[in-house]
Length: 261
Length: 233
Image (cartoon, rainbow over all chains, first blue to last red; front, top):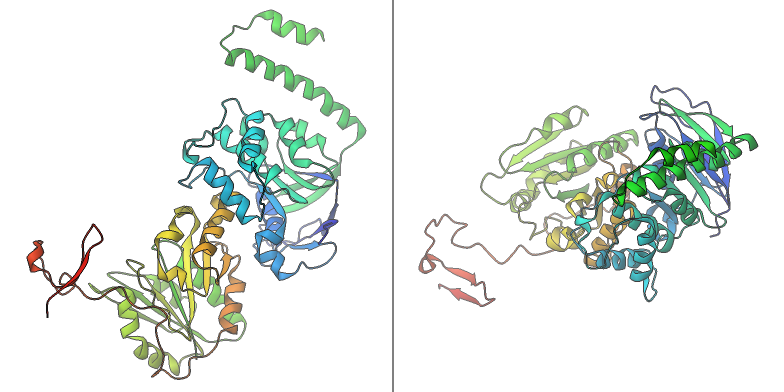
């Protein structure tokens, strides 16, 4: 089935009141942000979409695919669900090597391709500082390595028309590259973020409070321009971080140059 | 009467899953009753009683709780007969080498995704002979790891239906309730059979031998090098 759009039908917030936003439709090629304080229910919204909730979660939301209730097989079987999710939970518990894990996951998704392991690892290593090797045990990977591996996994193995991302800025990885990799072409992307650069890279953002969708804010041209500018500040900060990482010393010159620009 | 037997590793969330499932069953107009089998201690009956349904507790003491459940199958069904239309038997299980499921009951295995994707390979017939495998705690691991876990379950039991359930919120329990409602009835208790045999047999340790020496043991003895022999009459 070709997925053209998904619709979120509003349910109830934490206090049992109907959510102010009753319906949101997200079409292919759109990136939508989800913003709000911690504990406001952002992750729950994402997980409702991941499970294609039908009024059976705490929020009582319903998720429609192409305007219809998705078939039961799509809810039951991850091979048919075609939703990739990057959650905050990326601590690996599986006692197996990176290679075994990639092969198992590819199998569970029905992806059979030669060199899939190298493909995923190579991509992951573009996003992280310390390279991952295929005979590493999953449980020894650092937070950044785990997240890079998951981003690469989503891009290569779980390559799905719907991509849900939960706060990649906490990942200690190159987030712009990561988002570009994940968004791809013609996908439906939802990004939970506290990061102004990422939030303003989206077309609209759903504002969450006490478990409910409060309103939807469209990103203005002015905000997109602001996003580009703070992106420069972000890159400048990254360059300082890189210098420190490489054991170099910072001088006033590093700071004044940036301010003059 | 419909009978569902729920087995699973300790702490996987059998009781929590059942409580949410029972709520759905009651809302649907059914009359579920519960038997809880454990070894030494349980206070799960207090949780079940809060739902206003009949609850029976069986403590197997030093016997395998799955065996205990099987020996008492007729008693449990008799007890349940005039109290409700669905009997849910929750059994603790110890070694997971046997499975308490009978041919006409619905076998539900509850297993915890955080126990790692090798667990489905380690737990034996209670997973491999189940109709339904309920995977809990998936919300605290990554999607990829959840999918790998599911794949391992299907490798071990290709005919089961896997459900990811959240024991805290009850998400997914509506489907479990639906499976129970759609399962077939047990009609003839006399001819009801186990789906899988119990492991080997009773050994001398099972009947109270405490001496370790090899010469004191009778029955089927399996050596660490794989050699197996029968000692005794």
